[in-house]
Image (cartoon, rainbow, N blue to C red; front, side):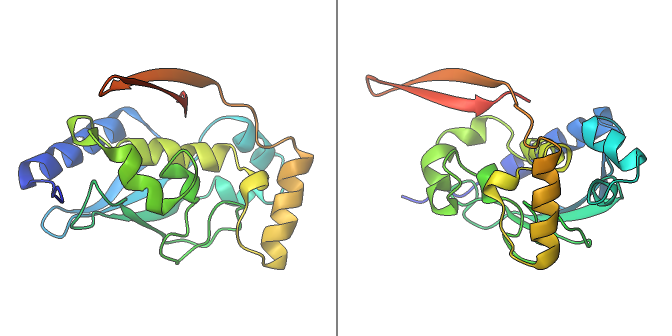
Length: 194
């Protein structure tokens, strides 16, 4: 049986996203279309190690602190299917391919980085708000590029990947372990603590 998210649940997701944006100065909502289930967010890094490197005029970090836009589209089978993300501004980043559907690091959507596995990990998620996690994770990949799981093989992307490695990226992010109990089975999940 396919679960389709209701209009009231989507409204709750949009409201939760707005609340997150209100308290985060690095993210802003540029456009919100509830009827078509589309949100466009603007990101601009204002602190952290990547920001410090950009202030020293070190490429590619100078690109990461510029204002960037991301379109989030909620598919009809959400939350069984992941939101569709399209990066709307030019950037050379190991984990982002601009102007391409699914051009933002797939690791955002499941523990093993597989879009097809989204539904396995999203069971029960309508009870918590998923949309606010997207800007948190996008800020993480802007501030902490991961050249070890890079995609895109243009000469610029390869050069950016090498420079990110030289500066010690990815920086270690603290992990937390969550225990999930379902049908008598215990599952331990390792997730990023943001």
